[in-house]
Image (cartoon, rainbow, N blue to C red; front, side, top):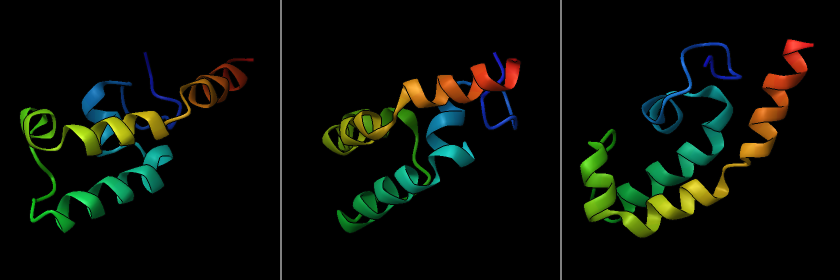
Length: 76
């Protein structure tokens, strides 16, 4: 399925690393990871193994219903 940002398919990698609709959330996860001495971008495995709490906070900050509404509105 195409992402509501209309840039690419809506994949986990796209949402984490590229989706322009998640720019603010991504900036926060980048800041938090870099503050712990980590690098960005990082591999998905590293997100889960080394930065799980930060990654969970990132995921919880995403309003998936809002992303879906954007997609639904465009389809009308």
